[in-house]
Length: 166
Image (cartoon, rainbow, N blue to C red; front, side, top):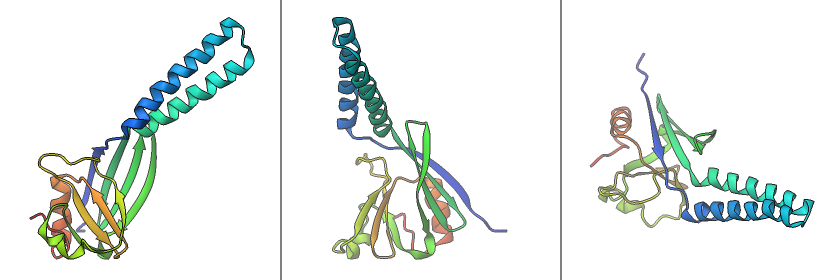
């Protein structure tokens, strides 16, 4: 058999706003629990638990990782929140991909004026050098990834006319 299997784990950059809001909610939860000693009652305890739970959830949203799994011309993307919960967010057949190239490649110039839905499963920021890749899926989606060199090599060997590494 001629199957290709590559997986890649990428730590995404979560929104800074979520991190700040998480600490603020923890602070308010501590104030809520502390107000019981002053004599404000059971409402402050319930409010404290609600704020602590909200802070925990925002903490999970602030720490995001993506796992790419390429198996025999199919790419699946899983989202991992706070190294705790995993959810499959997308699955793409490489036969339906129009083109895949580095984000600043000249090969994508013909696709820049398209009205597409952008989906970002990358590291979330421009690194030096920028190693993010873009692929257009069935003309309606523009997906941004940060795959490893090994994954690009395997994808290019399977689809030499669609995957470019410039």
